[in-house]
Image (cartoon, rainbow, N blue to C red; front, top):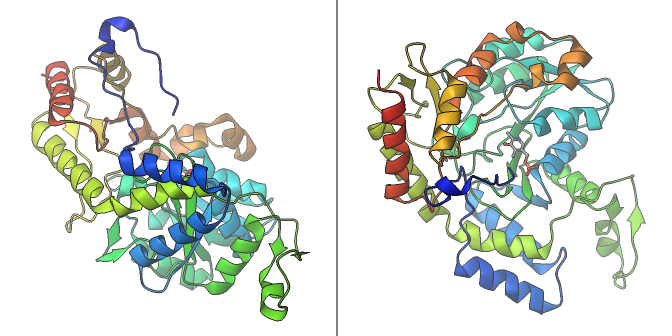
Length: 392
Ligand SMILES: *Cc1c(COP(=O)(O)O)cnc(C)c1O
């Protein structure tokens, strides 16, 4: 997440893992906001929510927040998940997906992933269900959408809420429908600096359930309910009512100005990511690598391009990461799974082998650099390095 200082010998060749795509429109929009006299939540946040709602379509409501982590927390709270409840989360995810369950005093039940899609395995979800289970948080890993038909069927059978962690999945589709329009309870996107669309830090909670949207709006600003007054009184601009101990999760207009400009560039940014993914597919053929799954309809955000080293590779994964780094290529690993992280391992007495698919991926995978400003020459440099290092 933080840029690493590289040794100067390779500085001129360095390929970062990710790079935000901030152009003149974004810079002008932010400057305009700074000059406007209104920099925290105001007209730009409303406009960003409206534009996002129009982009996703299908009658959704959008609640802008200052991170996806905040959005996931608000979604769980709005779905009525409480202390003592259990929430099913894939172990193969970022810290945020699970920590929000602990924010509200719930417990996490970890599920393994499918070895081919790297997304939560519905069979593993079923094994996690207990009488205390209240919700599932599937993660669309890398931008590949989970088996939502199976997940929604399980949720219906056991009366569970479904909150999609779509931090990677803007703008991914599932059976021709944009993520955000599927029949889950809520979907949360991230606009963190490394994500497809960025506001620096930020997120969007999307839902078709207006009660969830309303509760999230109130809880995002200290539990302050202004709508009650605006409906009933004419002179209300100064009056408010605190109906719950809410949170401080509102997005600023500075961030929203960035988001409005980025959203307008979605199609172009998606086309570049797709082109880069296809160039990796073509350039990395024949190496001891498992290439990432591609949905048949091509509806993938290509947030991540994750390859797995096969057993006949001449280098271990860790050696390959070091060798690439020495060539000035910054890669990453998604993820070191939560079940081996000290907090979760100790809390639930988990062992690494309990989630074999996640463990294997975490030990064999490399996330390659992928960002819209990556040139064909940048990418060829990465491909050439991999072909040299992995020649058998
Ligand atoms: C980035 C990320 C988050 C958290 O997003 P923030 O906007 O940084 O809070 C949650 N889940 C996954 C899978 C992520 O990659």
